[in-house]
Length: 77
Image 1 (tube, helix red, strand yellow):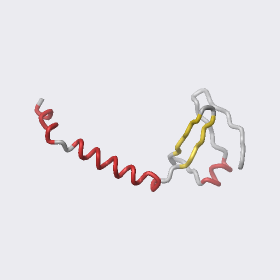
Image 2 (image 1 turned 135 degrees about the vertical axis):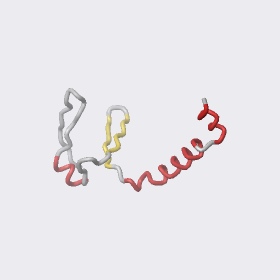
Image 3 (image 1 turned 90 degrees about the horizontal axis):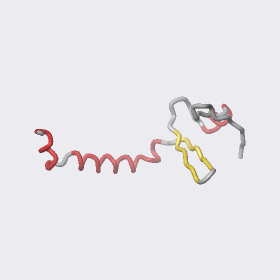
């Protein structure tokens, strides 16, 4: 396990050390997941495939809700 001190800016930002970015494959524009448990924060690089099933389900539910004929009445209001 590696450890490195980083400072938080006045805007609440941190810089990820280059060595951490290289070994984890984090690049500009990547999405990161932050988890908090009390005083511990874990940062993990997201992989699109990890949430693919959840995304499919969410899209299916949203489509069902948005394609509701009963709500078409509001188009005329």
